[in-house]
Length: 500
Image 1 (tube, one colour):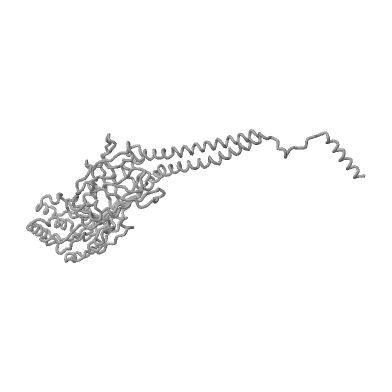
Image 2: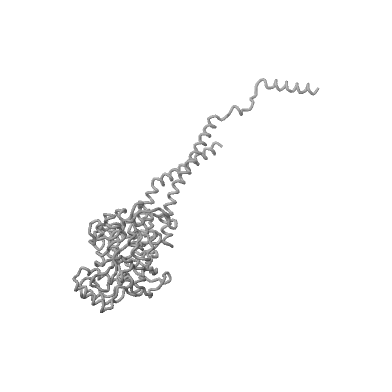
């Protein structure tokens, strides 16, 4: 039994020591192993898990467009407040893919990213053949752009507009408004003021949005410095743009808006948007989960489109109007165009009050990004922006009537997508489940080692005590002595006497 006891002690001690060793190794080396796997799989390298996701975005992306129809165009020409009704959504399946992928020796890679859009009538509330009354963007924009030109030039334009039967509001189909229509006004304007609108052919809000690229991006691969992975090195060969009036506003900061460096902090993230002609910073709002994957939610701060008075760092984006809209004329052919959140969400209330039919709300109109902080990969996102035009009566151009100065909403759109299906399963298994298992195992091993080692120690102490004191006096049998027979005879005699 002694040998068996010692074997048990040794066995428990050995198992406990192994658990302690494994738990200690995982505790010390586990985070490093997980971090190494994350770094290996998020860098821009053909062998990484994230590379195929980066090259050909495998998740379904959708462009959702809502147009604002003007319901009282004749009254607006007489000076009344515009009344609009939201039409749509008109939904397009968006495919993004990268071409001309070129790796460089300085830990960067260049590429062109193209997008293709396909109308999805099954997801839309309406068709592209529906007619909608909208501001005549080309005519009203040209009128404001020519406001300070000599009067005779403006009278010439007004006469040309009359000859072309151009009016302040048009009734066009959704497809024409978005993807373009032939407009002789383009040639007329360019004949009167050469170079004012330097393009020909069709005019449409998204005419250059489909089957086009967003410019030549050069970003860091993270092969040498993982903290710089996906960070933009240059765009179209530029380290900064020249649209704005300050170096800070012209800076190209952050990533291209697809992924971010791993191990993010709950503070902020940045990306450069060619569509907005600027870098945009989003701020941390809250932690959450998306289909079992932990996420940080980042949203737009109220200062994103604030004017220079309310937020001095934005002074470089001026000339400014009310807070909540950004003048993008300097990167849009000097046309009087502004971007904002949909329905002027988070904007100066005067913008909402100037147009009847707007109902801003956080639930419907706030943009957000849900990012897995360990990898910097977005799980769920919806980037929402509104396009607006400043319009007004311009003296000498009769077609502008008595339109009161107003920032008129034209449309708002959302680019939305989320990881799902096999991509989500692979991501969850490799970058969430396995790291979590390793994390739990270290505590399981450490937890098991404590009772096993304590049990082995107690058994060893007990076994040692038994071997040191093999006979306990309290349990010894009576030993024979010289008096034993006498006592036994006395007992027998007493028994015999009792029987007699």
